[in-house]
Figure 1 (spheres, rainbow, N blue to C red):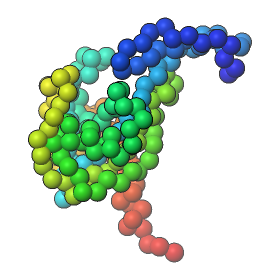
Figure 2 (figure 1 turned 90 degrees about the vertical axis):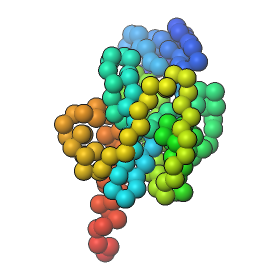
Figure 3 (figure 1 turned 180 degrees about the vertical axis):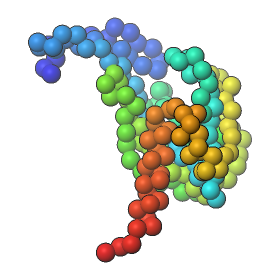
Figure 4 (figure 1 turned 120 degrees about the vertical axis):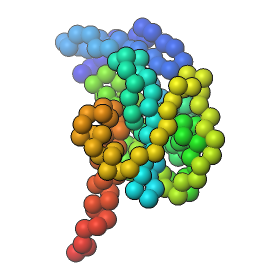
Length: 178
């Protein structure tokens, strides 16, 4: 699509909404957001999940720790991941492995996220932002996590996709080498 005009129709600290006119294609609206990180904290067959209220759908959901730094959109990706993990769970990771980059919803937003596997976990005090004071952090078994995904109890597409990357990594490491 060749954009013939573009304007920002709304902007706040967290996002910018664009309205683009395409040659022969009409109007297209999309949301610009800074890069994000999603962290899968995994240790000894357990993961840590966050439960929080998601306003657009009016419900609380379980998901992996994740977030963006609106005030530092160019922060190093690993620093962002480590910061979000510590902020939401209090955990500090000895090892962070980047498993890939995905998009939250590229049909309506440019926001990408790196998926990180955090291991060698040490507890510490969480430091949630003022808007995250209702967060609940819980440790659960991998077996229970997979049952929650299968039952639709975890409906966050980013968390489900991230777990797929973790599972795929584990399967590939067990395959015989030729």
